[in-house]
Length: 162
Image (tube, rainbow, N blue to C red):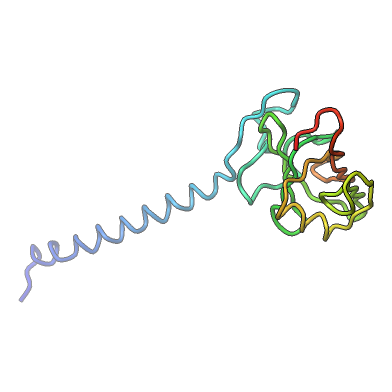
């Protein structure tokens, strides 16, 4: 027959295993609940840093509608992030995630679409394809995390970054 002392000794390893598993699960949930990692921005962003809205993110889970510069134009390298979701990274390494509006105007000068040095209206499909495979330098017109225009930088002009 098992006495109380033996029963306690045999239950303790199970309690330790359970508590360890529960602790790891809780830690994992807390880490994932913290949200995306922020990249510090430098410069002209006047947003409140204590806000729950991130300025910029290196996470693919970033919510473009709540991040960074809400209005204006941002010049930098545009990259595809996820369906309908892109990032633009400035020369100062500030990254802004954004969505394309339904009627976004996309203009290329040979990298997004068309022939080099010829201004061309591009499709969203062409923007997606080019930003996945090429270095696309463009000016993005933003309003609340949504881009109404993406205009490729014309090669050979002042400030050429190719």
